[in-house]
Image (cartoon, rainbow, N blue to C red; front, side, top):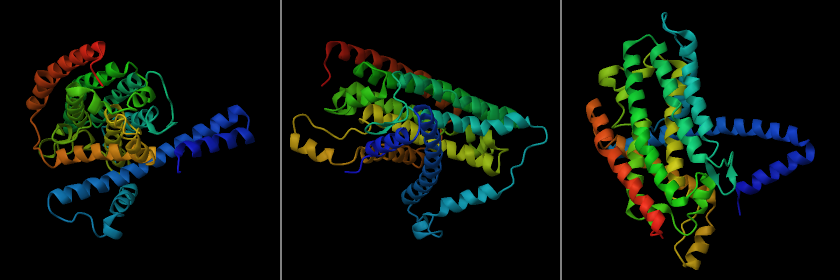
Length: 358
């Protein structure tokens, strides 16, 4: 049966056979970096096309249908157009920070890929504080956004960056408490242990109502953190032209555009890992025949299926709910989501201590 674990083991064994351990490790690092960049590019193309098709379906229209079969090469054409466009820099902008900002945002996305288990035993870095690592690194993306807004020397860019900063910092609290709910139930910060703890059932099912509440809070918070509608106030076209990337064009704009979709994939992959078992197949108690059939489906298919289901939910939100005002956005977090997430964390702590979960 097809297995990513088998492929990685074979490659590692071949490298160790041909080279000394230090050289083999260096080559593995280069391969991982190249694969990460390739994954970024492919995901960007796929997710942009997926969003346009989902939007078209919701609005009862066709969507992209000219370039390639069913319009599947439309995003490739758009990417080539952006690559060929001239990258303009405003005269009074801070050129160094202006050029650096898109790469900072992209680098944060690449660093977040490290602890995510894409399949069974297919993980770049199985760090024992994986959840803490993700929470820490994800907060760095706001630096790139603020850098872009300030360096552009444009009032719309600066306003968009300040909005984004306030939004990300606020909603990180609710997202963090939702993640801590699963950490309390599992008793570990290591993502591989969180996945293994769901061998006899995913936390969304066996964690009772607090796990469901945590999942709802997580989805709302990460939608806001990734600046997606109805929380896309940082780039509200009717108010701020294009927000923090108003002055960006060409490949620099493409990097910001790509980073948005990569961040959506990453937060959905983390959500799938925490609440839906990541690569773990659906197992139901002592139903051995059913569980055995589920095991035949490759672990990578399970992981991608769950992740893309959550991505579809976030895209669905965009074309269903109207944009909130700034005061409504912050009131939702500080007056409602944060108190609910705190109470939910206390409740799940009691459940974990008393052993009431399945």
